[in-house]
Image (cartoon, rainbow, N blue to C red; front, side, top):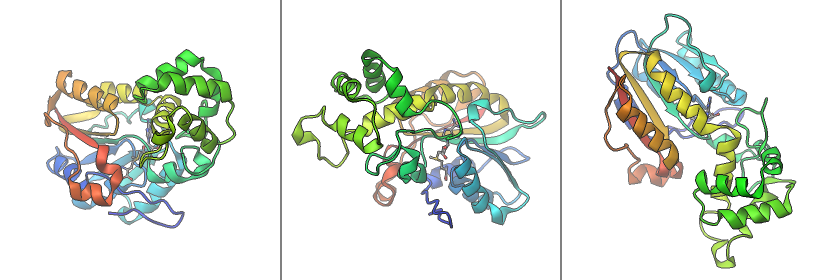
Amino acid sequence: MTVSKPGSYCHQPVLTQQVLAGFAAMPQPEHLLDCTIGGAGHSCLLLAAHPHGHLTGLDQDPGACQAAAMALAPFEGRWHINNCNFANYLPPPQRNFSGILADLGLSSPQLEQAERGFSIRHAGPVDMRMNPGGGETAGQLLQRLSEAELAALIRSYGEDRRARSIARRLVARRPFASTTDLAAAVAGAYPPRQRHGRIHPATRSFQALRMAVNRELEALATLLERGPEWLLPGGIFAVISFHSLEDRMVKRAFLNDHRLERLTRKPLTADPEEVAWNPRSRSAKLRLARRV
Ligand SMILES: C[S@@+](CC[C@H](N)C(=O)[O-])C[C@H]1O[C@@H](n2cnc3c(N)ncnc32)[C@H](O)[C@@H]1O
């Protein structure tokens, strides 16, 4: 399903069949929490599949909340959106959810709109905040970190073996006027023959900076700790991750948390057909657990 509407918010939700199957049997009353509503692709499918269900959607990006509200218009009276970070969310008293979904990372519009500062190919400010209303930008982070701190960040979050030479170049060349300048500086740390592959050499460094700017692993840790408390007995907890560190955190939480029963020993992944028409799904991993 393509979510597309005026305002050009267009995001293909991943692993939709697996998500629908995961939430097929939920305790009553059916009230879902979509922690990362984005363009509401998953939310629309879930509301359509559960005609008596209700949904609360969260997103820290106000633009995503607006896009989600437009997409959800046909389901009038059955949803509510809260513009917040899921790590700061407090459900209303007495509210227990029958299912929680978190589809982590960025939406396609965030990635593609140059002014958001996530794009390697389109020049924009070095920003990378999912919530443009506050917090340190990637440009400010790049100014503040020492070379050793930057190398550690690119190595751990970006899993890039050239982290040290990339950090050395970035510290020598900062500040950066645009994302494309930053991407070119990272690419310069690679030998010329490795600069023009299918995947841009700055992809991993951009990912690392984005994860740090948005404190993504910290937010996920908070959600994994609090989420089970928000579920009804038998309620479903589903997390889609795109990074090995995130997947490891979800795997451990679903295995070790005494409040949860793991439903997927191995993560569910996209089949070749989905990868062919939605390349973003290539690295998506879905894990499911049930509140005991
Ligand atoms: C992959 S997109 C979700 C797409 C959505 N499932 C759909 O079908 O359209 C991830 C969304 O989560 C939001 N997001 C990421 N981390 C968040 C957090 N900690 N709190 C709230 N929203 C977050 C992003 O702003 C983005 O809109």
